[in-house]
Length: 262
Image 1 (tube, rainbow, N blue to C red):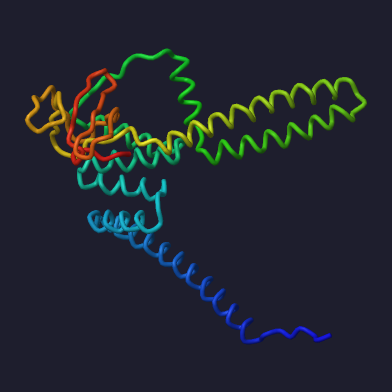
Image 2: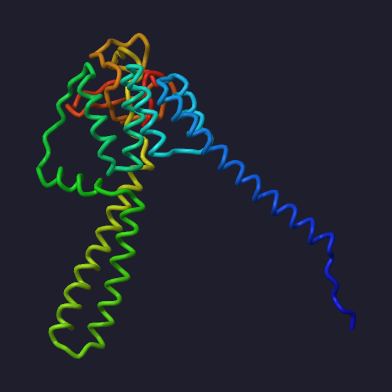
């Protein structure tokens, strides 16, 4: 019976490929980190246009990032681009709903927009529930759910094997509460994930935008919106036109090029 021999050349080839793969990814990560540092340096030196360009490049290369969107919004705000700042901060909050700095900056920018649209009134418990869902990100809710389930399972074991009546009662009660928290955290995480994947909200990116009664350039203008206003897309099936609605109930058609989806 022949003994199997190791092909040294093949092993070396696979080692070189694996090493090259690791080096490539390390180099890519270092390059991204350097890009972020360069963008931050440009911002700190008040080169806001350059910072915006670097942040945009970083987002296109690395993908969405709440921190980068937050810094991008700051840079846009510094050059008085309310639409760019609002769009960036909206995207940052979509990814990190608990970011109080981004929320404060967004409210400040909205206070400077032309359109002051009062939203439709909603019941207080609806507002409270939405605030609760937005209290943490998807990942944070997922961690809370897993931690609640793990502790609940341990307490259930205590309930089954403990001798003291008081300890059994306490462990059972707390485990039930934690199981409810587990279910709620999963629900909140699902709703957050759904909000992340939805593309219904958009920001007006032009100085003035006519809202028409039909999806045609010759349609009559019902009203006008201005830069930075947030709208909801109700019909996005057409390429050049989108039907939008406002929190006060008004609706109409706008040119797709005039808005940017959050």
